[in-house]
Image (cartoon, rainbow, N blue to C red; front, side, top):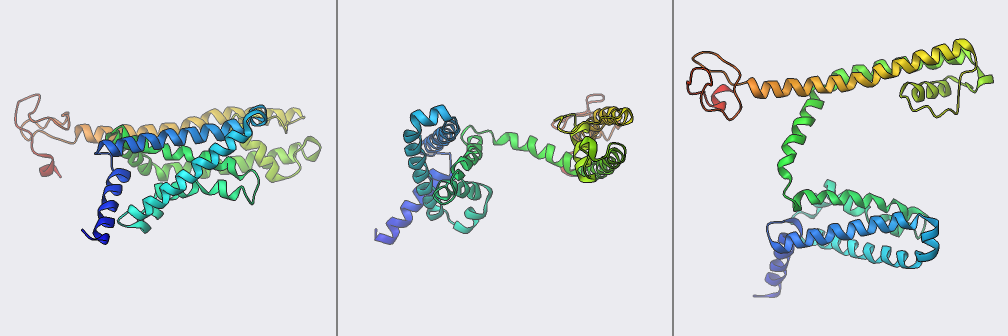
Length: 279
């Protein structure tokens, strides 16, 4: 075996370990990687606590750079072992892998940029591959389809909310004015959003009786607004589940209520048509 063949064989082995979980080495690699990611994120969070930073800042700094070098080396190896490096680099995980190492290097120029390393927690999504939870992706796709079907209703709802926010903000600007902190319509709209979403920072408050009455109306409106998108998405999910459940019809008695994997009609016992035939 010549040098080029040895190099290609090494790439195939690394690709099998790094990008796959079918081998014990691949599972062990991903498990080690997840532990390192969690340790890195915990170290960054602890370093933001002043007392811990004063006592152990030097060790946390060394740990941060050590893990960054490790992740940088891992990213380069992934690029080298990948059959299509550009595809990996432009993928979701490829971008996250790159962003997970950049903040430490940027901290040499921009102090404090290293705290952005908490984005590394996104890399823990690889745990889905390690724990063989990919079967749950079908459920996620089901939810995504329901949200996609509801997009027009949600868009109309959001447009209506924007109109309501502008209306409340404008009314409060006219009623309260700069004396009560409503110095402009955009700032009044900010108050309306904070009030309707029931956040209630309290940095701007109405002082007049009429203003307080309008604020009360905005608060009540907020509860209705919160309920609407939940109802829209729930209705779409229910509709999608109903379509999946009752799509199959018995050709003999025309009963629709059959599970997806049913073979015979539960009323008359007739063999149900295949799903491919239904479609």
